[in-house]
Image (cartoon, rainbow, N blue to C red):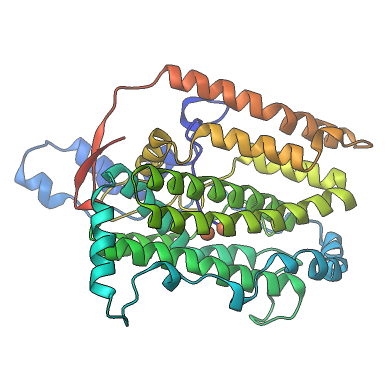
Length: 396
Ligand SMILES: [Fe+2]
Ligand SMILES: [Fe+2]
């Protein structure tokens, strides 16, 4: 799992901002206190409190799936073993971060490190900000495993449960764990980034957690993960493409390998939802519309580095500008999922189901229109320092 953003959101009352304005008001007493005081005085500086890490501000709903539907997931145990677990790769066949990094036990380590750092010199700061944000997102993996284990009927009840769902979640986590590891080690070796600030950001983010509004409901949970795996497939694919354009084929390979894992995970999660559409088309289309109405909140939207109260917004804005993950991607993913699950072709739905069907099928063009309008209102480019790159300034 990983990114991302919904950059079109803040401009429209119909698609309100994810959390930014509310978040600022809760997370940062300094943000408002300082603005009411006379600037420039020493007293003001002394009164400034450190910023607070963000937290979720929406009403948190739990256990929205009717308990009898838990049986659906129990009855799918064997199906999941045959159809979902096959998308995991045996550990012995998996790539490991070390396959793409200088080998510290080899005589060639110094030379390989020098080459890595030479290549990294050619890559611009804005790319590094986005790669750091992607890495931090991957590093908050404990949050995502927690989220999967909130889901009724599929959670790992013991920590080593032998149900197909639990086996999947643990192995998925183990595969994902290599993503953060690899990017973290690469960025450390590159010498281009402030590792301490990055490490702080990871600690803050895991501490903040996340409520993607999946309500312990596996319908919502697997729709969310389907969306997210595709989003990360797209964004890592784009960082691979950019690395290639900057002449760093090794970094392109790193991002490309991660992207291919995300694709495999997307295949598994979309297959689960496809099965739910087959068993319970009405319930699944209603869940899909519900998730999209609430918007897919991005896994790292509570990102914080101890300084920037709008860090996620700033990181997202660069990802959007350089084309790693954009509002268009959000609409494309939705359109892809509508097609993948053949939502337009669903028949025999209830009134509520038909309403949900109309809503999700009509949403991609509406998002695109809003995005075009937002583009038209594009503000003048602003530059901002990022602690992750030693406070060097980057155009948002
Ligand atoms: Fe993923
Ligand atoms: Fe990942």
